[in-house]
Image (cartoon, rainbow, N blue to C red; front, side):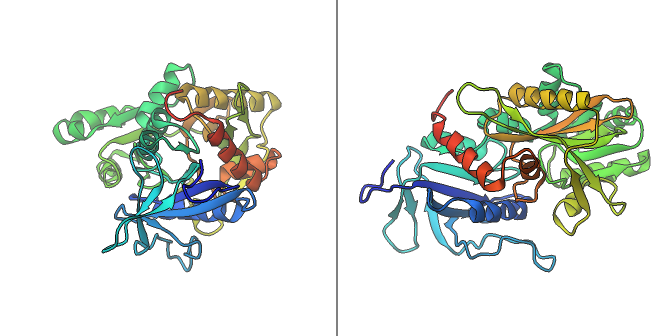
Length: 371
Protein backbone atom coordinates (compact mmCIF):
# COMPACT_ATOMS: atom_id res chain seq x y z
CA UNK A 1 0.00 0.00 0.00
CA UNK A 2 1.18 3.52 -0.71
CA UNK A 3 0.48 6.80 1.04
CA UNK A 4 -1.66 9.23 -0.94
CA UNK A 5 1.14 11.81 -1.17
CA UNK A 6 4.34 9.84 -1.75
CA UNK A 7 5.52 6.41 -2.75
CA UNK A 8 7.21 4.38 -0.01
CA UNK A 9 9.89 1.95 -1.22
CA UNK A 10 10.18 0.40 2.25
CA UNK A 11 7.52 -1.75 3.90
CA UNK A 12 5.88 0.24 6.69
CA UNK A 13 5.69 -1.68 9.98
CA UNK A 14 3.82 -0.48 13.07
CA UNK A 15 5.34 -2.01 16.21
CA UNK A 16 2.62 -1.87 18.88
CA UNK A 17 3.57 -2.30 22.54
CA UNK A 18 2.43 -1.60 26.08
CA UNK A 19 -1.17 -2.44 26.76
CA UNK A 20 -3.81 -2.29 29.44
CA UNK A 21 -2.76 -5.24 31.60
CA UNK A 22 -0.19 -6.53 34.09
CA UNK A 23 2.24 -7.50 31.31
CA UNK A 24 2.67 -3.91 30.11
CA UNK A 25 6.37 -3.81 31.03
CA UNK A 26 7.12 -7.22 29.51
CA UNK A 27 5.67 -5.96 26.24
CA UNK A 28 7.99 -2.94 26.26
CA UNK A 29 11.05 -5.10 26.84
CA UNK A 30 10.24 -7.21 23.79
CA UNK A 31 9.40 -4.16 21.68
CA UNK A 32 12.73 -2.56 22.52
CA UNK A 33 14.51 -5.63 21.18
CA UNK A 34 12.40 -5.71 18.01
CA UNK A 35 12.97 -2.01 17.35
CA UNK A 36 16.70 -2.52 17.77
CA UNK A 37 16.85 -5.54 15.45
CA UNK A 38 14.52 -4.58 12.62
CA UNK A 39 16.25 -3.85 9.30
CA UNK A 40 15.68 -0.14 8.61
CA UNK A 41 16.88 -0.52 5.01
CA UNK A 42 13.84 -2.77 4.35
CA UNK A 43 11.30 -1.41 6.80
CA UNK A 44 10.01 1.97 7.84
CA UNK A 45 9.01 1.67 11.49
CA UNK A 46 6.15 3.41 13.29
CA UNK A 47 6.40 2.83 17.08
CA UNK A 48 2.94 2.85 18.68
CA UNK A 49 2.48 2.63 22.43
CA UNK A 50 -0.68 1.67 24.28
CA UNK A 51 -0.68 3.48 27.62
CA UNK A 52 -1.85 1.71 30.81
CA UNK A 53 -5.19 3.53 30.50
CA UNK A 54 -5.68 2.19 26.97
CA UNK A 55 -4.78 5.28 24.92
CA UNK A 56 -2.91 4.67 21.66
CA UNK A 57 -0.07 7.16 21.13
CA UNK A 58 2.71 7.76 18.65
CA UNK A 59 5.68 6.72 20.77
CA UNK A 60 9.32 7.67 20.75
CA UNK A 61 12.05 5.11 20.24
CA UNK A 62 14.01 7.04 22.84
CA UNK A 63 11.69 6.04 25.64
CA UNK A 64 12.87 3.53 28.25
CA UNK A 65 12.23 -0.09 27.31
CA UNK A 66 14.23 -1.88 30.00
CA UNK A 67 13.98 -2.44 33.75
CA UNK A 68 16.27 0.06 35.45
CA UNK A 69 16.99 0.02 39.16
CA UNK A 70 14.09 -2.35 39.68
CA UNK A 71 11.69 0.10 38.01
CA UNK A 72 9.52 -1.33 35.22
CA UNK A 73 9.21 0.61 31.95
CA UNK A 74 5.88 2.12 30.90
CA UNK A 75 4.41 3.89 27.88
CA UNK A 76 4.19 7.65 28.33
CA UNK A 77 0.59 8.48 27.43
CA UNK A 78 1.46 12.08 26.58
CA UNK A 79 2.38 11.44 22.95
CA UNK A 80 0.23 12.23 19.91
CA UNK A 81 -2.98 10.20 20.18
CA UNK A 82 -3.75 7.77 17.36
CA UNK A 83 -6.81 6.01 15.99
CA UNK A 84 -7.05 3.10 13.54
CA UNK A 85 -10.08 3.48 11.23
CA UNK A 86 -12.30 0.40 11.34
CA UNK A 87 -12.48 0.22 7.55
CA UNK A 88 -8.73 0.44 7.02
CA UNK A 89 -6.85 3.40 5.60
CA UNK A 90 -4.29 5.72 7.16
CA UNK A 91 -3.69 6.08 10.89
CA UNK A 92 -5.41 9.18 12.21
CA UNK A 93 -3.65 11.57 14.59
CA UNK A 94 -5.87 13.13 17.23
CA UNK A 95 -4.04 16.10 18.72
CA UNK A 96 -6.31 17.95 21.14
CA UNK A 97 -7.81 21.13 19.67
CA UNK A 98 -6.63 20.39 16.14
CA UNK A 99 -8.26 18.97 13.04
CA UNK A 100 -7.43 15.25 12.85
CA UNK A 101 -4.55 14.52 10.51
CA UNK A 102 -3.23 11.36 8.87
CA UNK A 103 -0.01 9.58 9.70
CA UNK A 104 -0.26 7.31 6.67
CA UNK A 105 -1.08 3.67 6.11
CA UNK A 106 0.90 0.75 7.42
CA UNK A 107 1.58 -2.50 5.58
CA UNK A 108 1.80 -4.74 8.62
CA UNK A 109 1.44 -4.50 12.39
CA UNK A 110 3.86 -6.25 14.74
CA UNK A 111 1.76 -6.53 17.93
CA UNK A 112 4.42 -6.94 20.59
CA UNK A 113 1.71 -7.33 23.22
CA UNK A 114 1.15 -9.84 25.98
CA UNK A 115 -1.82 -10.69 28.17
CA UNK A 116 -5.36 -9.38 28.05
CA UNK A 117 -6.31 -6.87 25.35
CA UNK A 118 -3.31 -7.83 23.25
CA UNK A 119 -2.38 -11.50 23.14
CA UNK A 120 -5.93 -12.78 23.65
CA UNK A 121 -7.47 -12.16 20.23
CA UNK A 122 -8.80 -8.67 20.95
CA UNK A 123 -6.26 -6.63 19.01
CA UNK A 124 -6.21 -9.34 16.38
CA UNK A 125 -9.96 -8.83 15.92
CA UNK A 126 -9.48 -5.07 15.68
CA UNK A 127 -6.84 -5.51 12.98
CA UNK A 128 -9.01 -8.02 11.12
CA UNK A 129 -11.87 -5.51 11.08
CA UNK A 130 -9.50 -2.83 9.80
CA UNK A 131 -8.16 -5.12 7.08
CA UNK A 132 -4.57 -4.80 8.30
CA UNK A 133 -2.08 -7.67 8.17
CA UNK A 134 -0.29 -8.52 11.40
CA UNK A 135 2.36 -10.79 12.87
CA UNK A 136 1.28 -13.86 14.79
CA UNK A 137 -1.82 -15.95 15.36
CA UNK A 138 -5.36 -14.95 14.51
CA UNK A 139 -8.36 -14.32 16.73
CA UNK A 140 -9.31 -17.87 17.70
CA UNK A 141 -5.81 -19.27 18.24
CA UNK A 142 -4.85 -16.19 20.26
CA UNK A 143 -7.97 -16.42 22.44
CA UNK A 144 -7.62 -20.16 23.06
CA UNK A 145 -3.89 -19.84 23.69
CA UNK A 146 -4.56 -17.14 26.29
CA UNK A 147 -7.22 -19.12 28.18
CA UNK A 148 -5.38 -22.07 29.71
CA UNK A 149 -8.60 -23.92 30.53
CA UNK A 150 -9.78 -24.01 26.91
CA UNK A 151 -6.22 -24.54 25.69
CA UNK A 152 -5.85 -27.72 27.74
CA UNK A 153 -9.24 -29.01 26.61
CA UNK A 154 -8.32 -28.45 22.97
CA UNK A 155 -4.88 -30.02 23.32
CA UNK A 156 -6.37 -33.06 25.06
CA UNK A 157 -8.98 -33.29 22.31
CA UNK A 158 -6.14 -33.43 19.77
CA UNK A 159 -4.68 -36.42 21.60
CA UNK A 160 -1.84 -34.57 23.33
CA UNK A 161 -1.07 -35.45 26.97
CA UNK A 162 -1.87 -32.79 29.58
CA UNK A 163 -1.66 -32.96 33.35
CA UNK A 164 -4.64 -33.13 35.78
CA UNK A 165 -6.30 -29.78 36.50
CA UNK A 166 -9.42 -28.11 37.90
CA UNK A 167 -11.03 -24.97 36.48
CA UNK A 168 -12.33 -22.57 39.16
CA UNK A 169 -14.98 -20.35 37.58
CA UNK A 170 -16.13 -17.15 39.24
CA UNK A 171 -19.72 -18.26 39.89
CA UNK A 172 -18.65 -21.63 41.34
CA UNK A 173 -16.12 -19.97 43.63
CA UNK A 174 -18.72 -17.57 44.97
CA UNK A 175 -21.66 -19.98 45.28
CA UNK A 176 -20.21 -23.49 45.63
CA UNK A 177 -16.78 -22.99 47.19
CA UNK A 178 -16.78 -26.15 49.32
CA UNK A 179 -17.29 -28.34 46.25
CA UNK A 180 -14.52 -26.51 44.36
CA UNK A 181 -12.10 -26.97 47.27
CA UNK A 182 -12.87 -30.70 47.38
CA UNK A 183 -12.28 -31.00 43.63
CA UNK A 184 -8.90 -29.32 44.02
CA UNK A 185 -8.00 -31.44 47.05
CA UNK A 186 -8.55 -34.54 44.93
CA UNK A 187 -5.61 -33.49 42.73
CA UNK A 188 -3.22 -34.11 45.62
CA UNK A 189 -0.51 -31.80 46.94
CA UNK A 190 1.25 -29.68 45.94
CA UNK A 191 -0.73 -27.81 43.30
CA UNK A 192 -0.12 -24.67 41.26
CA UNK A 193 -2.85 -22.03 41.33
CA UNK A 194 -2.79 -19.55 38.47
CA UNK A 195 -5.02 -17.11 36.59
CA UNK A 196 -6.53 -18.84 33.58
CA UNK A 197 -5.93 -15.81 31.33
CA UNK A 198 -2.62 -14.25 32.31
CA UNK A 199 1.02 -14.76 31.44
CA UNK A 200 4.61 -14.09 32.48
CA UNK A 201 3.97 -16.28 35.55
CA UNK A 202 2.00 -13.51 37.24
CA UNK A 203 -0.51 -14.43 39.95
CA UNK A 204 0.84 -17.98 40.37
CA UNK A 205 1.21 -19.66 43.75
CA UNK A 206 2.60 -23.07 44.64
CA UNK A 207 0.29 -24.50 47.31
CA UNK A 208 1.61 -27.20 49.64
CA UNK A 209 -1.53 -27.95 51.67
CA UNK A 210 -5.24 -27.24 52.02
CA UNK A 211 -4.79 -24.32 54.40
CA UNK A 212 -3.01 -22.25 51.74
CA UNK A 213 -5.52 -22.87 48.97
CA UNK A 214 -8.18 -20.19 49.46
CA UNK A 215 -5.62 -17.38 49.73
CA UNK A 216 -3.88 -18.61 46.57
CA UNK A 217 -7.15 -18.66 44.62
CA UNK A 218 -8.00 -15.16 45.79
CA UNK A 219 -4.55 -13.98 44.74
CA UNK A 220 -5.01 -15.46 41.25
CA UNK A 221 -8.45 -13.85 41.05
CA UNK A 222 -6.87 -10.39 41.33
CA UNK A 223 -5.61 -11.07 37.79
CA UNK A 224 -8.55 -13.08 36.43
CA UNK A 225 -11.87 -14.23 37.94
CA UNK A 226 -11.32 -17.57 36.19
CA UNK A 227 -8.60 -19.64 37.87
CA UNK A 228 -6.79 -22.82 36.91
CA UNK A 229 -5.41 -25.25 39.50
CA UNK A 230 -2.91 -27.80 38.23
CA UNK A 231 -1.49 -30.87 39.91
CA UNK A 232 2.27 -30.52 40.34
CA UNK A 233 4.15 -32.73 37.89
CA UNK A 234 7.57 -34.09 38.74
CA UNK A 235 9.76 -33.43 35.77
CA UNK A 236 12.16 -31.15 33.95
CA UNK A 237 10.84 -28.07 32.12
CA UNK A 238 11.63 -28.42 28.43
CA UNK A 239 10.54 -25.81 25.89
CA UNK A 240 10.31 -25.82 22.12
CA UNK A 241 9.64 -22.95 19.71
CA UNK A 242 7.55 -23.38 16.57
CA UNK A 243 7.67 -21.18 13.48
CA UNK A 244 5.23 -21.07 10.59
CA UNK A 245 6.81 -21.98 7.26
CA UNK A 246 6.17 -20.13 4.00
CA UNK A 247 3.81 -21.59 1.43
CA UNK A 248 2.40 -25.02 2.14
CA UNK A 249 5.38 -26.31 4.10
CA UNK A 250 4.61 -27.66 7.61
CA UNK A 251 5.62 -25.58 10.66
CA UNK A 252 9.20 -25.93 11.85
CA UNK A 253 10.22 -26.81 15.40
CA UNK A 254 13.39 -25.55 17.06
CA UNK A 255 15.83 -27.53 19.10
CA UNK A 256 14.35 -28.01 22.58
CA UNK A 257 15.87 -26.28 25.58
CA UNK A 258 15.72 -26.94 29.31
CA UNK A 259 14.85 -24.10 31.68
CA UNK A 260 17.11 -24.10 34.73
CA UNK A 261 16.11 -21.94 37.70
CA UNK A 262 18.23 -21.22 40.77
CA UNK A 263 17.28 -22.45 44.21
CA UNK A 264 16.03 -18.94 45.02
CA UNK A 265 12.80 -19.74 43.14
CA UNK A 266 10.27 -22.49 43.64
CA UNK A 267 9.33 -22.30 39.95
CA UNK A 268 9.94 -20.26 36.79
CA UNK A 269 8.26 -17.07 38.08
CA UNK A 270 8.22 -13.45 36.88
CA UNK A 271 11.34 -12.51 38.82
CA UNK A 272 13.33 -15.44 37.45
CA UNK A 273 12.24 -14.59 33.92
CA UNK A 274 12.83 -10.86 33.84
CA UNK A 275 14.73 -9.59 36.89
CA UNK A 276 18.32 -10.55 37.65
CA UNK A 277 19.97 -13.71 36.33
CA UNK A 278 18.14 -16.45 38.15
CA UNK A 279 17.46 -18.67 35.14
CA UNK A 280 19.43 -20.17 32.30
CA UNK A 281 18.56 -22.17 29.22
CA UNK A 282 20.41 -25.32 28.22
CA UNK A 283 20.13 -25.80 24.44
CA UNK A 284 19.85 -28.46 23.25
CA UNK A 285 18.18 -30.08 26.22
CA UNK A 286 20.06 -33.11 27.53
CA UNK A 287 17.40 -35.69 26.80
CA UNK A 288 17.51 -38.81 24.56
CA UNK A 289 17.41 -38.24 20.79
CA UNK A 290 14.12 -40.14 20.51
CA UNK A 291 12.52 -37.87 23.12
CA UNK A 292 13.79 -34.81 21.22
CA UNK A 293 12.06 -35.93 18.04
CA UNK A 294 8.85 -36.85 19.89
CA UNK A 295 8.84 -33.47 21.64
CA UNK A 296 9.39 -31.49 18.43
CA UNK A 297 6.60 -33.42 16.71
CA UNK A 298 4.23 -32.79 19.63
CA UNK A 299 5.09 -29.08 19.58
CA UNK A 300 4.07 -28.86 15.92
CA UNK A 301 0.87 -30.82 16.66
CA UNK A 302 0.00 -28.38 19.43
CA UNK A 303 0.67 -25.42 17.09
CA UNK A 304 -1.63 -26.91 14.45
CA UNK A 305 -4.29 -28.01 16.95
CA UNK A 306 -4.88 -24.36 17.90
CA UNK A 307 -4.52 -23.13 14.32
CA UNK A 308 -1.56 -20.93 15.24
CA UNK A 309 0.23 -18.67 12.79
CA UNK A 310 3.59 -16.94 12.92
CA UNK A 311 5.25 -18.30 16.03
CA UNK A 312 4.59 -20.00 19.35
CA UNK A 313 6.44 -21.59 22.24
CA UNK A 314 5.28 -24.95 23.60
CA UNK A 315 6.24 -25.89 27.15
CA UNK A 316 6.63 -29.49 28.31
CA UNK A 317 7.42 -31.55 31.36
CA UNK A 318 9.82 -34.44 30.81
CA UNK A 319 9.14 -36.88 33.63
CA UNK A 320 11.65 -39.24 35.31
CA UNK A 321 10.10 -42.21 33.47
CA UNK A 322 10.61 -40.52 30.09
CA UNK A 323 7.05 -39.30 29.45
CA UNK A 324 6.30 -35.94 27.82
CA UNK A 325 3.40 -33.82 29.08
CA UNK A 326 2.32 -30.58 27.41
CA UNK A 327 2.09 -27.80 29.98
CA UNK A 328 0.95 -24.96 27.74
CA UNK A 329 1.40 -23.13 24.45
CA UNK A 330 2.16 -19.42 24.23
CA UNK A 331 1.14 -17.72 20.98
CA UNK A 332 3.17 -14.55 21.68
CA UNK A 333 6.05 -15.69 23.87
CA UNK A 334 8.52 -13.37 25.54
CA UNK A 335 10.44 -11.76 22.71
CA UNK A 336 13.56 -10.02 23.91
CA UNK A 337 16.72 -11.30 22.24
CA UNK A 338 17.42 -13.22 25.47
CA UNK A 339 13.92 -14.67 25.87
CA UNK A 340 13.49 -18.43 25.56
CA UNK A 341 11.92 -18.65 22.08
CA UNK A 342 14.49 -16.41 20.34
CA UNK A 343 17.31 -18.24 22.13
CA UNK A 344 15.93 -21.57 20.91
CA UNK A 345 15.84 -20.30 17.34
CA UNK A 346 19.33 -18.81 17.62
CA UNK A 347 20.60 -22.24 18.66
CA UNK A 348 18.69 -23.72 15.71
CA UNK A 349 20.38 -21.41 13.19
CA UNK A 350 17.92 -18.49 13.02
CA UNK A 351 19.35 -15.28 14.47
CA UNK A 352 17.16 -12.73 16.23
CA UNK A 353 17.16 -10.20 13.33
CA UNK A 354 16.38 -13.07 10.91
CA UNK A 355 13.52 -14.20 13.15
CA UNK A 356 12.02 -10.68 13.25
CA UNK A 357 12.32 -10.41 9.47
CA UNK A 358 10.79 -13.82 8.85
CA UNK A 359 7.77 -13.05 11.04
CA UNK A 360 7.12 -9.80 9.16
CA UNK A 361 7.46 -11.51 5.79
CA UNK A 362 5.09 -14.31 6.84
CA UNK A 363 2.51 -11.71 7.87
CA UNK A 364 2.84 -9.86 4.56
CA UNK A 365 2.31 -13.09 2.60
CA UNK A 366 -0.80 -14.01 4.58
CA UNK A 367 -4.12 -12.80 3.13
CA UNK A 368 -6.21 -10.50 5.28
CA UNK A 369 -9.58 -11.87 6.42
CA UNK A 370 -10.72 -15.49 6.65
CA UNK A 371 -8.14 -18.09 5.64
